[in-house]
Image 1 (tube, rainbow, N blue to C red):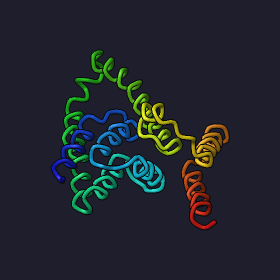
Image 2: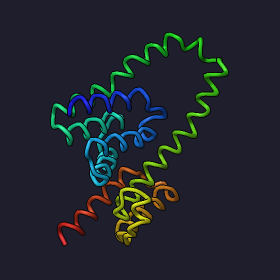
Image 3: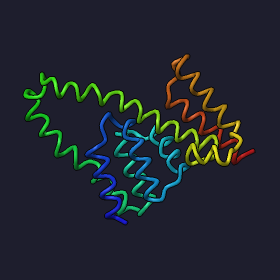
Image 4: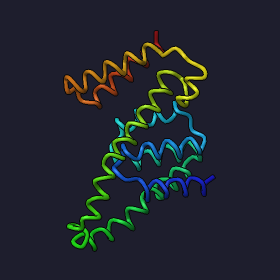
Length: 187
C-alpha cells in the first residue's frame, strides 16, 4: 500500500498546478482510488480550514494516515514535497529565460481556467457527497436522494456570510462544527 501512496502523491506533486485548492480535485481522485470515502474527504476539507500549512501537505498527511497509519502519512507527505524540491530550483535557475517567453505565458494563461475548473469540480463532488449522499452525478440521477436539509442550509448560510458579509471562513468552519456537533451528538 505504501507504494500506491508514494506514486499517487508523487503524481499529485508533479502534476498539481494552480495551488492547493486546484489540486484538491486530483487529491480527491487519488484518495478515492486509495479507499477513502467522500465523507472522509469532506472531513479533510474541514480540517484544512483549521490546520495551518499548505493544503497539499495537509491533504497528503491526512490521506496517508487514514490509508496506512503513520508510515502512510510520512510517505505521502514526503512524496508530495519531492516535486517542489526538484522543480523550484530549476525554475529559479531558468526564470529569466522563461519570464518573457510567449509560449510559457500562453501555457500559464491556460492553466488558470483549468485550475478554476478543478476547484469547481472538487466543490461539486463534495456537494454531491455531503448534501445528497451520492458519489457521482450519475449515481444521484440513477438513485435520487433527498438532500440533507440541515447540511444544505449550512452550505447556503456559510456561502452567503462569506461572500456577502465577508465573514472569515475559519470562523464559519468552527461555528459550523460546533453547531453540527451540538445537533448531531448532544441533542
